[in-house]
Structure formats: C-alpha cells, structure tokens
Amino acid sequence: MDSNKKMDRRQLVTLLGGLAGAGAAAHLFASTEKSAAAAGASGMQQTPWPYKPLDPDAVAQRAYESYLKGHCMYGSFEAIVGTVADQLGGPYKDFPYAMFKYGAGGVNGWATLCGSLNGSVAAIQLLSPNPNPLIDNLMAWYEVAPLPNFYPKGAKFPEVRSMAGTPLCHESIAHWCKKAEKKSYSPERVERCGTLTASVARQAVVLLNEQAAGKTMEVFGLSKQAQGCSGCHEKGGMVENIRAKMECGECHTAEVKSGHGK
Image: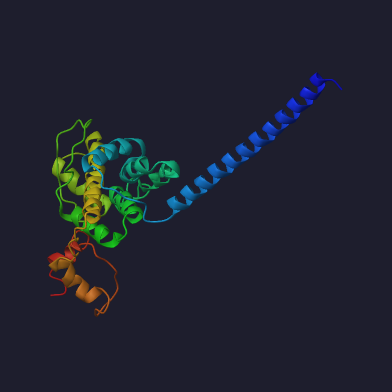
C-alpha cells in the first residue's frame, strides 16, 4: 500500500473523528440549550417574577396601545407584565398574554369587575412578593379617584373624569357617561376605557415600585358606611350573609338612603 493510500486512510479517520466530535459538540450544545430553556421556563413558572421598578408613564402609554389591540384586561396586564418580560427576556416573553382578552367589558361584556383592574391585579399577583395590600390599595383607589387621570398620546377626545364609586364595570361606565353626557357605545366612551386602562396600569406600577423601594403600604380600611353595613351583614354580624370589601351604596342605594340598619 503506497503512502498516498495510507494518507487517504489517515485523512478518512481524521475526518470521521472530526465529524463524530462535531456531532458530540452539537449534541452537547443542544442539550445545554434545552437545559437552559427548561431552567428559564421553570423560573417563569415561579412567582413572584423578578421585578425592578418600571416607568409608570411608559407602562400607561403601552397599556393604552394594548387596549386598542385586546381591550381593558389584556391592555393593563400586557403593559405591566410585558414590560417586565422585556427586561427578563427568554421564556418570559413567551407568556400567552392573549388569554386575558376574556376580561373585556367586565368579563366578556358582563360588566362585572372592571377589566383594567382585573388585568392589573393579576399582574400584581404575578410580580409582588406580598400582593394583597397592593391589590386592596388599588381597588380602593379605583372606587374614589376621579378617573381617567392619564391621557396618552393618540387620545382624541376632551378629558372627562368621573368617580366610579365601585370596582364594577357597569357602574363605572354609567357614572362616566352621565358626567360626559355621552352614550355607552359612543367612540368617546371607547376611548375613555382605553385611557382608564392606562390610568389603572400606571397606578399599579406606582404601587409595585413603592413596595420594591420598601415603602409601607397604607392599611386598607372600610369606609364608615361600609363598616355600618358590614357590622350586620359580614362575618360575626346578626345576618352574616355577605363577604365584601367594596362600597355598598352604589348598588344598595335605597337601603342606604332609607337609613337601613340605623
């Protein structure tokens, strides 16, 4: 066997060895990538997600834009959690945000819990190590704050603020329509719910930022009116037939006006 043939065999062995090594390296790389992805996915499943303070105004603007894509609950949740996911990268960005489109119009148009609240408290639950005081604070704020209080770029209609008096979608819209003198299916009301989504997402971020900075949250307390009702109707009361923290007068108007329970 001549030297050229011997060389050819050596080259073949070297080539085959190189290919085997490359295959092993490729397999190792794929395994490493898979392990990293699995570790990342596992991290995404653990709560709370890592949180660093966000820009409330930037999140509010994003919430308005997301509202235009998927309505109120999707808008507030995607803006808050999506911004965090952008920071974290990896599998966090693969969260199925579209699942929160069901919350539109107070859950598929049933006008129950306001979608901007629903999405924001879901974000708080995901991102906060102690979510309950933040949720209570946000819900109570929504009842009494003149809203919307953030007007994003792209908004067209004049600013009109109203107080919901309740976290319920239908009451919130009804109060605004009365104040604005607009119909509930008007383009002005549609935009109002977008700016409301921005406002609520912004406030949720303010609360998350304050908690991240170590600020103690205000202790949630019922109003005097709600305390009076709860004294009879909540746990330990004579009737004990409700479980609630929300204001009573917006729905039970007749009873409150009549001095029921006094």
